[in-house]
Amino acid sequence: MFKIKNFFRFSIQKIMKISEENIEIQKKIGYFFKEIKLLQEALIHTSYANECDIPYNYERFEFLGDSVLELVVREKFFNAFPEKDEGFLSGMKGYYVSGEYLSRIAKKMDLGKYLMLGCGEKNKKDNKRKSLHADLIEAIIGAVYIDGGIKAAKPVIEIFFNEVFENIRDAQSDYNYKNKLQMLTAKKIGEYPEYEIYEKFDRGKKSFIAKIFLGDQYLAQGFGDSKKEATKIAAKKAYNTFKKKHGDLQE
Image 1: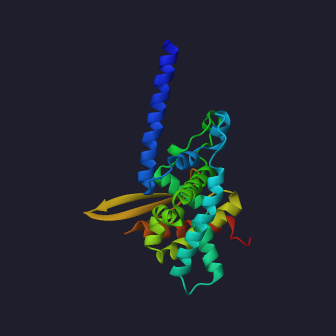
Image 2: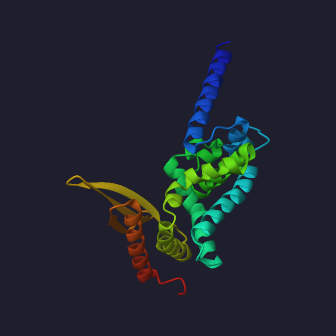
Image 3: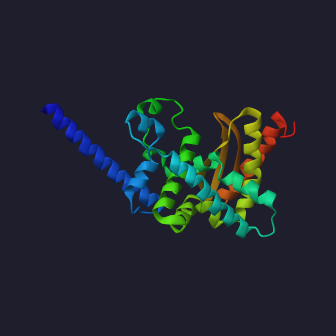
């Protein structure tokens, strides 16, 4: 009887925790589901589904969300850059919907904590790997699309890409050096740069410091009056520093 009561209490606590997290994540993405089961399914990793014998996981939503995300981002860039050709637009799209960039969004919004992983996956050292969090972003978008269509999915994607879409012309310069650096480090050593942004106050004036790392290796830093400016300067420095040491893409 004691074991049954404890199990019942544990089950109730788990249900309450999941319910609270469902509300929390819906607030973060700015969308409340009509059919909450869709969100719950989008948060179930294959490892959790296998261990708990659940007949579904987030992969189908990820498949759909990938296409919905690309459509919205393509349309945004198409309208924002009427003077640019297909090559430029494809490069911009590729950079901003890459697993690397999506994982940054997931990290910034702390979405990984809602993902339901199996015990085996949790115990892996790489359970926070970028591809997993990028997949989660796409799965959430897919679930929103099924629940509310493209009209519901667009605002959610706009929240995910708030910094990009609000300053979409600036995204061009941000893309240039950040994309070059990402492509170069991926080709040469198979790693992607990590960005850390800090606020600095000097005599009441606010500025920003952007630092770039490759794993534990420090590459460069940049200062600016905005996060964009600091990041752009840091990416340019890091790109030039890394290129001197490892060569450019053609070498």
